[in-house]
Image (cartoon, rainbow, N blue to C red; front, top):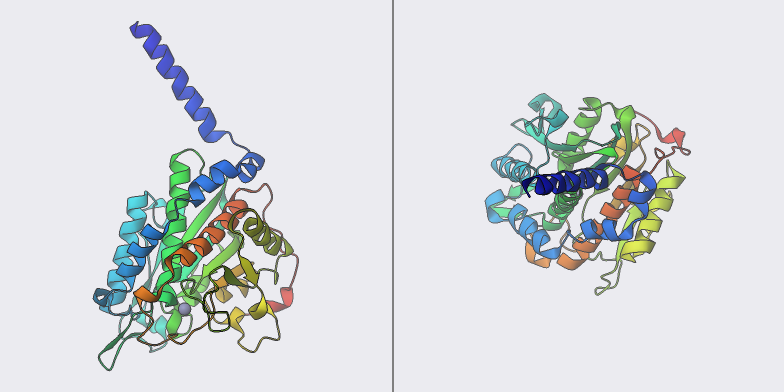
Amino acid sequence: MKKILLSAAILVFFLACKSNKNLTSTELTSNSEIITKFGNTINSKDVKEHIYTLASDEFEGRQTGEKGQKLAAEYLINQYKSFGIKGINGTDNYLQHIPVEALNGKSEHPSENVIAFIEGTEKPNEILVISSHYDHLGIHDGEIFYGADDDASGTTGVLEIAQAFAKAKKQGYGPKRSILFVNFTGEEKGLLGSKYFSKNPVYPLENMVAGLNIDMIGRIGKERAPDDNNYVYVIGADRLSSELHAINEKANATYTHMALDYTYNEESDPNRFYFRSDHYNLAKHGIPIIFYFNGTHADYHKATDTKEKINLDLLTKRAQLVFYTAWEIANREERLMVDKGSDLVEN
Ligand SMILES: [Zn+2]
């Protein structure tokens, strides 16, 4: 009896190993049941918890170098740890320290990018970057600038996507390529955290296959109808890689069914958003990026950008789109092709 039980246990163990490790790229990118199982772990309840913490009074508007930013960094690290995701190079260090000299006189104190890493099962040296900025404007004239949309929303998205990939990995569906989750500091001071990251990369820039950057996904922008809760602006997707644009479109057509608005992707668009958030510090080095964005609104860069105005379901759906796009990039057979726009590369 004992022997039979043991044999059965061994058999179960080997079956588990097989289902855990032997899925091909084609199997991992075509099995919508598996993919949606993890996409659906991104949910509005978790989203609310992150937003309400990051945009709380306690975090004081997360000004670069100040107490609130440090508290936010600590919160992010604790979240990554609770998901079972390691820090830089698989260590317990999640902080890229930025000396005060690199902050251009805009902070009295040093600051930190927060970085977490899931190593790829087959192509660990090919890295997908998923990012947001977690800093905001701090306190002015006694008023907290909460930055619930800018960019507690994107930072929440990155956390939820990280958790979904961590859950997948635990169940044997770890990504083939590595994924680097980066929460930049100093964005509001002039993209300083991402600038430092690209000048002092913790992994070689040439290994970075793409960057998905999320900056403001929790609201409805002023150029859309006030009840338009099913769209996102997509910026930059086709600038360096025609494949990236197609992958994002397909992920949306298959799973999230939102209107993808390319208005701000027009090279003639006077807002020039392509150059205005952290992704640009990757794009200028030839790394294809997508910037996910809801557009600006009346509360943009005001103390009134508060947590209760966040559309939790819309934020959830937009984060899911980023997850589905990331899943394809991380698991597909071929590395994303860079076939366009070398003239955009500068220093
Ligand atoms: Zn922002």
